[in-house]
Image (cartoon, rainbow, N blue to C red; front, side, top):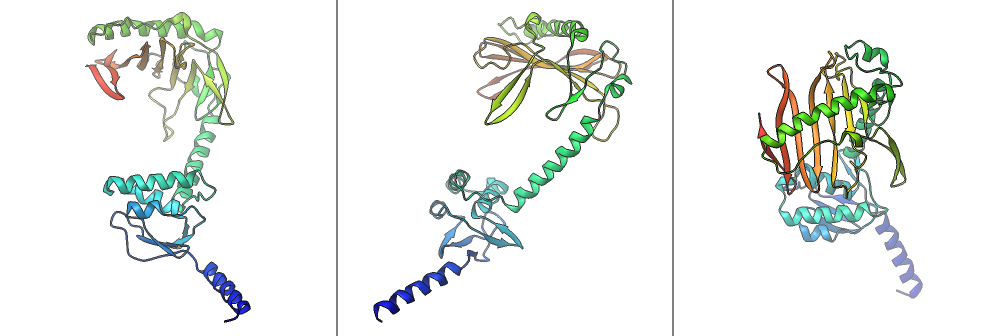
Length: 314
């Protein structure tokens, strides 16, 4: 074969190889419902074997599985996430390492499952937003929560919110101070050594705009969440939630910070509460609910190395 023919032969072989698509064998994985063996650039890879997974190259891949287009990274994500507990630790770790490499590369490909979940979630959020945007003072005034004036209700990030204006602030602070009587009892019941108490004078009614990862968010401190309806459209048991926070509640290095939620029933009385108290790095969570027709302490909790620990339970 002369040099010209040799070059032509090589070029023709290269073109033929370029046309060979990625494909897989029909043998199923021993851990999931996906095919086990995949060919990428004419090389065979086994997604059940850690060493083989590590060798998968970063490149654009397309596999037609049940009529849908999958990239190898999407296959690995569904492969390991759906059947997590079936995997040996080394194989699982190799999957996540390769997934991370694809996530940081231009070859990331959304899987059909992920696309379906994303579109479904977008549909759910759109429907939720439409309902929440319609909530007005008319919806809130049908309840006997007469201690508050409802006006200027607006939608922001999955809530129908109302800022706490000067008219409502005095009642809000009174209710937060009322929570301190339960916190004082909780400290005694749980044999806590620290003097937890919400500094009512530090409750913040402001908000601030934050820029995180090129996205703009509003950080609210104390505000009302209007929840007049259940997901099925019935009148809610707790149509109003007071979210409260001290001015340092979201500061990482703050020594004495508090936040929580107070839930109001249809008759305007408090029906439950979730009170989060920090002194230094010591956490105390007090939960209130209606017990024998009266608001009382349901439980007192803390965390130990990230694990919730119950200190008192009614």
